[in-house]
Image 1: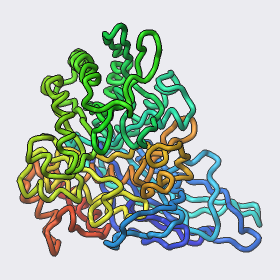
Image 2 (image 1 turned 45 degrees about the vertical axis):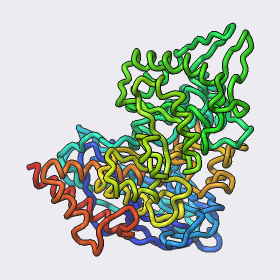
Image 3 (image 1 turned 90 degrees about the vertical axis):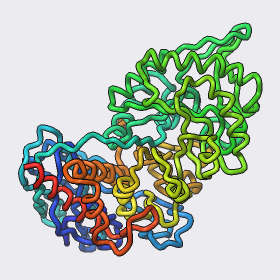
Image 4 (image 1 turned 30 degrees about the vertical axis):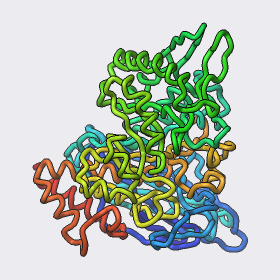
Length: 556
């Protein structure tokens, strides 16, 4: 039987063994907006009924065509986080953590008795969504085995749709997209028609949640790979070498660009030209060389070897010509040298950059790094800075700031590990607004490998890269049945942060930046920074409610 049922915000996480906190506030949204809330309920049972029960979920509302209901499911997290000394975590021990949002079939789902369960309601408005306040009624019904009947409980939530269109996202956002992991999980041949279909589905989900720049595998990305090992080949460029002369086929790259654009992704970052963490070697590059298809560059090749420079001198001008033919401007393309070089790698990184900079025709080079010296010395003019190393860049007034987080950003700053409160995920929205951040990067969109790609994993059972990375860091989307991507809580909450950012920018266009910052910081005891921010979900929920109310008042 259903013992208790009530509404939660999207920032609450429902663990099976802990009663969540009900939400009693109001919900409002703009057109072109996304709003999520949850309905939680406790499944009690007499001894004779102590088995999983079939539960049906029904949503009734004038907003029904814009709404979707999914089941909140817990997944195992054996390595929740590393450094947890800042205390900003829900739990730190291995266990089951709510994260997966799984579709609910017509026949209902099985819910476990003597535990808390939840369903997630997401409303995505568009230009045609009617304005006004509408009821959204969610009904949970379950079979009663002892009398053959049904038990039903309902809750109704009012949702106001404000007749103002949310502006398009200005922030550039990339989450590294791994085509090889899709092929490996679904056991399909890379770039077969089946693979293209699966890739498209994950691309569309990425675009829906704000990704507008995509990692493009010219070569199999030289990322998260143990030295001497290699990942499944997903190279988009066909390469031939006959008698020392290179030629290139860009048919798959053209299809990739057209597909991404059709999905709503407008910017492209080219896969790294050198290996990660030092730029000492070349990425794996496959070619038909004198009639044999084989690897022509890889771990065995020194990064600054004459052979690789000869290849780049042939390849990069041909690539640039193709990018121009496809209509990609310099504003829509980024190149990478090497990911996360450290201070002692500056000389090697610069040597690699000098090997290619004259071949890139002015297209910008961008890399994730944390050492200010790379920017100060002009070695990397477009750094993507780790959140916990951003202060020197802010102190020097850097413009066009890009930031990122990954496995290492566990102390004080925002991140999206499963063990973190969702508010710590969503707070990035006001932070991005305050610091006028131009772009954001997170590496783990769909990394379904163990750490360093030593083996493939089942992401429904292994959420921490086989104990190598905090649960929730490696991927934000699950590879669902039939190739359908299944969302995570973390994916949707980060998207809410991006919608918050757009709402703040809209309000600024109607008032002033000073006015919006007064809303953001006015009631705080200290200014909002990347390291200091309200931990309570109520801050974010109240802020967005006030922003929406002001937009409504000013747009009449």
